[in-house]
Length: 234
Ligand SMILES: Nc1ncnc2c1ncn2[C@@H]1O[C@H](COP(=O)(O)OP(=O)(O)O)[C@@H](O)[C@H]1O
Ligand SMILES: [Mg+2]
Image (cartoon, rainbow, N blue to C red; front, side):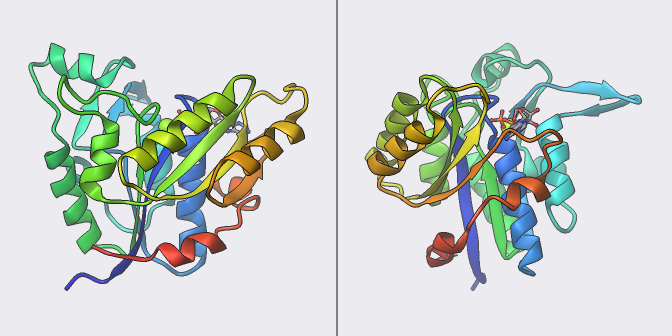
């Protein structure tokens, strides 16, 4: 019987809005709480070569905050070189990405950690293939979802659509985080209040625009106490 786990699927209102930063902050907080956490970025697209080493920035950042060794294929079953829509990258390589492959990697990861943070790719409904999308992955893993809202003009509709999509798939929205993407956004507090009123899940915090963003700094703006009730057996 595997141990109880804190396990969450982190999605967001878009790409480049702070999913990795908040996932890293969750991993940091779990480590601070003495919980051995693993990270997954099951689908990633975009490789750069740094000092002769091929790296994907999300994977590198998550790996930094996660405890223990994370086998590459298990952490990221699907890694593509080009920073493009992953299903198109897969198509170019004649691969049909499958949520079941991700599910098996997740189950292996979950055996070895007390907590698993799974960062999605892009927004909630990014396609995996002609047949499946990232929402299907969240369903296949049967995980409560943490939604990162990238605060900028237009984010309210994106946030509400995402919350609706999460619920329509029978998943729990465990909480959401407001992350400032556009520091010049007018009426920021009013926008956050509108989100608080409209989203039927706890706000886990508001992260301002940080000069030197880090998992530790972002974690300082989060209150993860509402997530304690989401301990899952896997
Ligand atoms: N609150 C913030 N303050 C400063 N920089 C941020 C903040 N949130 C995200 N960033 C930066 O914005 C970029 C995109 O964030 P990231 O977490 O990678 O987004 P996503 O995973 O949604 O694509 C990164 O360079 C990250 O460091
Ligand atoms: Mg990311």
